[in-house]
Length: 246
Image (cartoon, rainbow, N blue to C red; front, top):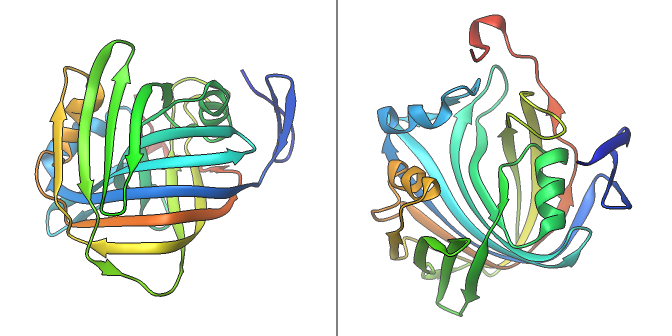
């Protein structure tokens, strides 16, 4: 387990990491979906967060990222998340699954940021018009998906800052609600409502994706040929006693 040795300073696996760390180069494809709020509330059982809804619909996201070499190594990850509200502040993304192909980033993610990282085997391929991914948990295939990139190509880079909420029952910060901000600079961006196809195995991640409406068509797809930006600490947020999980 990682150990905090100062404000934003951690040790793990014999090395010292000081936050923020800079994501120097990554590729991203993501798709946004909506689903019935009632279907996603059970996904937050025991977590002091609630779904953010628009006209009674919850908003979920699946994302595929390949990281070139940086502070936590080179690896792939696949995220499944839900937009949520916390005790205060703006809505943010809460990740329900974040399988990765690297042991170092698994440990750092769970301990530094309370992110639900677990080790997967994966085939992740980015092509000019589509992204394909297969996620395996050991020998079992959890998810197989294909994203068609949107048809609108932006001629300029984008800057964004994604609010995030996180909570784990274990790790270095167990049962502590954390809030953070993930600044991103995206280039080579394509937007649209590209086609999305997925097949699901008998796996908890697959069940969560289906609850989030990811068996249907997305509201939006986003592809960026390059993503970079700093990733800093997530800070604890007090949970009112009326919202504390039992």
